[in-house]
Image (cartoon, rainbow, N blue to C red):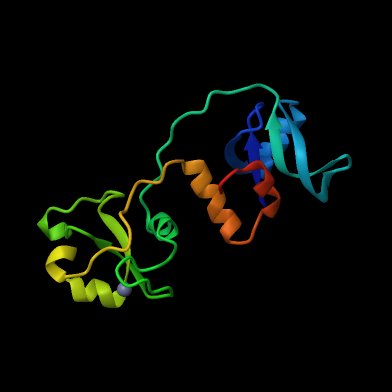
Length: 165
Ligand SMILES: [Zn+2]
């Protein structure tokens, strides 16, 4: 079963939720269904894929967790040293952990196995391996998450509600 994009009353994307939670919101009349996939879960209720809250809620700020999956997604699944795309991707600390490098969005990047091994315990400068881009913390966790679904080819019906994903 798919996920459901929740829009604020203002039509701004708010979060992604489970279809169960979305159905509860519909049944309680706290939201309206904007898109559905045609599959009926109740006699008069098709399974929603996009819903809109009837009441406006303030958007909380939430940070994107620094995980392997999220770093790979930020970096477009490519080695930030040589541009390699493929299976053999690892996470590299720009300033090595053994030298005090932190687990932060600014210090952790995607690197292929070969570059990671070649760089070893050096900084990019010491190793003569310049980065292809400056790593940053992704700005909006929701847009980040939405674009991950869209890039995987699922939930294309969300696209028209999301600018820039
Ligand atoms: Zn590489």
